[in-house]
Image (cartoon, rainbow, N blue to C red; front, top):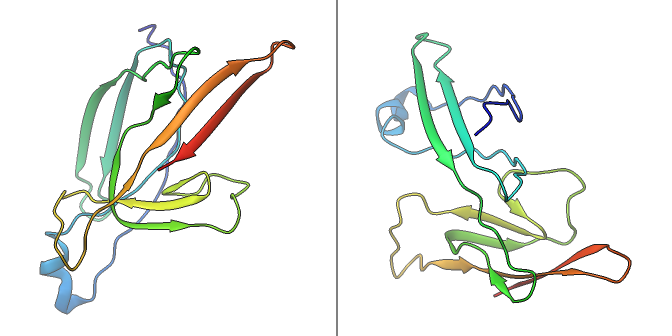
Length: 144
Protein backbone atom coordinates (compact mmCIF):
# COMPACT_ATOMS: atom_id res chain seq x y z
CA UNK A 1 0.00 0.00 0.00
CA UNK A 2 1.30 3.40 -0.96
CA UNK A 3 -0.98 5.38 1.39
CA UNK A 4 -2.03 7.38 -1.66
CA UNK A 5 -5.69 8.44 -1.63
CA UNK A 6 -7.31 6.87 -4.70
CA UNK A 7 -10.72 8.51 -4.35
CA UNK A 8 -12.61 10.45 -1.76
CA UNK A 9 -16.30 11.27 -1.67
CA UNK A 10 -18.97 12.47 0.69
CA UNK A 11 -22.55 11.34 0.19
CA UNK A 12 -25.51 12.36 2.31
CA UNK A 13 -28.39 9.92 2.59
CA UNK A 14 -31.19 9.39 5.04
CA UNK A 15 -33.46 6.64 6.24
CA UNK A 16 -36.84 7.82 7.50
CA UNK A 17 -39.63 6.03 9.34
CA UNK A 18 -43.05 7.13 10.50
CA UNK A 19 -43.11 7.65 14.29
CA UNK A 20 -45.17 4.50 14.88
CA UNK A 21 -42.55 2.40 13.01
CA UNK A 22 -39.40 4.06 14.38
CA UNK A 23 -38.61 1.38 16.97
CA UNK A 24 -39.01 -1.39 14.39
CA UNK A 25 -37.00 0.60 11.80
CA UNK A 26 -34.02 0.91 14.13
CA UNK A 27 -33.54 -2.87 13.99
CA UNK A 28 -33.65 -3.08 10.18
CA UNK A 29 -30.75 -2.95 7.73
CA UNK A 30 -30.33 -0.19 5.17
CA UNK A 31 -28.36 -0.64 1.96
CA UNK A 32 -26.18 1.81 0.07
CA UNK A 33 -23.81 1.19 -2.83
CA UNK A 34 -21.09 3.25 -4.46
CA UNK A 35 -19.20 1.85 -7.45
CA UNK A 36 -15.45 2.49 -7.25
CA UNK A 37 -13.31 0.86 -9.96
CA UNK A 38 -10.11 -0.70 -8.58
CA UNK A 39 -6.94 -1.84 -10.31
CA UNK A 40 -6.51 -5.57 -9.76
CA UNK A 41 -2.74 -5.41 -9.20
CA UNK A 42 -3.00 -3.32 -6.04
CA UNK A 43 -4.12 -3.67 -2.44
CA UNK A 44 -6.44 -1.08 -0.95
CA UNK A 45 -7.49 0.13 2.46
CA UNK A 46 -11.07 1.33 2.80
CA UNK A 47 -11.77 3.88 5.52
CA UNK A 48 -15.53 4.28 5.85
CA UNK A 49 -16.58 7.09 8.15
CA UNK A 50 -20.24 7.41 9.06
CA UNK A 51 -21.76 10.31 10.95
CA UNK A 52 -25.26 10.55 12.34
CA UNK A 53 -26.24 14.13 11.53
CA UNK A 54 -28.85 14.19 14.31
CA UNK A 55 -26.72 12.98 17.22
CA UNK A 56 -23.27 13.83 15.87
CA UNK A 57 -22.04 10.31 16.63
CA UNK A 58 -19.28 9.06 14.34
CA UNK A 59 -18.35 5.48 13.43
CA UNK A 60 -15.29 4.29 11.52
CA UNK A 61 -14.83 1.01 9.67
CA UNK A 62 -11.46 0.03 8.20
CA UNK A 63 -11.16 -2.88 5.79
CA UNK A 64 -8.47 -4.23 3.50
CA UNK A 65 -9.57 -4.85 -0.08
CA UNK A 66 -7.71 -7.11 -2.49
CA UNK A 67 -9.44 -7.15 -5.88
CA UNK A 68 -9.41 -10.50 -7.69
CA UNK A 69 -7.18 -10.88 -10.71
CA UNK A 70 -8.50 -12.62 -13.78
CA UNK A 71 -6.54 -14.81 -16.15
CA UNK A 72 -6.41 -13.78 -19.79
CA UNK A 73 -6.21 -17.37 -21.00
CA UNK A 74 -9.29 -18.89 -19.39
CA UNK A 75 -12.86 -18.22 -18.40
CA UNK A 76 -13.24 -16.61 -14.99
CA UNK A 77 -16.24 -16.27 -12.70
CA UNK A 78 -17.38 -13.31 -10.68
CA UNK A 79 -18.51 -13.53 -7.07
CA UNK A 80 -21.87 -15.20 -6.57
CA UNK A 81 -24.54 -12.73 -5.46
CA UNK A 82 -27.57 -14.09 -3.58
CA UNK A 83 -30.60 -11.86 -3.88
CA UNK A 84 -34.28 -11.42 -3.09
CA UNK A 85 -34.67 -9.20 -6.15
CA UNK A 86 -33.18 -9.58 -9.64
CA UNK A 87 -34.68 -7.65 -12.53
CA UNK A 88 -33.39 -7.37 -16.10
CA UNK A 89 -33.35 -3.78 -17.35
CA UNK A 90 -34.42 -2.70 -20.82
CA UNK A 91 -31.26 -0.65 -21.33
CA UNK A 92 -27.86 -0.29 -19.72
CA UNK A 93 -27.75 2.99 -17.76
CA UNK A 94 -25.31 5.61 -19.03
CA UNK A 95 -24.31 6.54 -15.46
CA UNK A 96 -23.61 4.34 -12.44
CA UNK A 97 -26.75 3.46 -10.52
CA UNK A 98 -26.97 1.79 -7.14
CA UNK A 99 -27.40 -1.98 -7.34
CA UNK A 100 -27.20 -2.09 -11.16
CA UNK A 101 -24.62 -4.40 -12.75
CA UNK A 102 -24.66 -4.01 -16.52
CA UNK A 103 -28.26 -4.57 -17.56
CA UNK A 104 -29.44 -6.18 -14.29
CA UNK A 105 -30.78 -4.53 -11.14
CA UNK A 106 -29.99 -6.76 -8.16
CA UNK A 107 -30.52 -6.18 -4.46
CA UNK A 108 -28.26 -8.40 -2.35
CA UNK A 109 -29.82 -10.28 0.56
CA UNK A 110 -27.83 -8.97 3.53
CA UNK A 111 -29.20 -11.30 6.19
CA UNK A 112 -28.73 -14.40 3.93
CA UNK A 113 -32.10 -15.87 4.87
CA UNK A 114 -34.58 -17.19 2.34
CA UNK A 115 -38.00 -18.80 2.59
CA UNK A 116 -40.20 -20.88 0.28
CA UNK A 117 -42.29 -17.76 -0.30
CA UNK A 118 -39.15 -15.81 -1.24
CA UNK A 119 -36.58 -18.21 -2.76
CA UNK A 120 -33.07 -16.97 -3.53
CA UNK A 121 -32.06 -15.49 -6.83
CA UNK A 122 -28.42 -15.92 -7.92
CA UNK A 123 -26.22 -13.87 -10.22
CA UNK A 124 -22.91 -15.19 -11.50
CA UNK A 125 -20.98 -13.67 -14.40
CA UNK A 126 -18.53 -15.51 -16.61
CA UNK A 127 -15.70 -13.24 -17.74
CA UNK A 128 -13.04 -13.67 -20.36
CA UNK A 129 -10.46 -11.01 -21.16
CA UNK A 130 -8.76 -10.95 -24.54
CA UNK A 131 -6.07 -8.77 -26.04
CA UNK A 132 -6.55 -8.49 -29.79
CA UNK A 133 -3.96 -7.98 -32.49
CA UNK A 134 -4.46 -4.22 -32.21
CA UNK A 135 -3.67 -4.36 -28.44
CA UNK A 136 -7.28 -3.54 -27.58
CA UNK A 137 -8.61 -5.36 -24.55
CA UNK A 138 -12.10 -6.75 -24.79
CA UNK A 139 -14.24 -8.43 -22.18
CA UNK A 140 -16.99 -10.93 -22.68
CA UNK A 141 -19.49 -11.29 -19.85
CA UNK A 142 -22.26 -13.87 -19.59
CA UNK A 143 -24.75 -14.11 -16.73
CA UNK A 144 -26.16 -17.38 -15.45
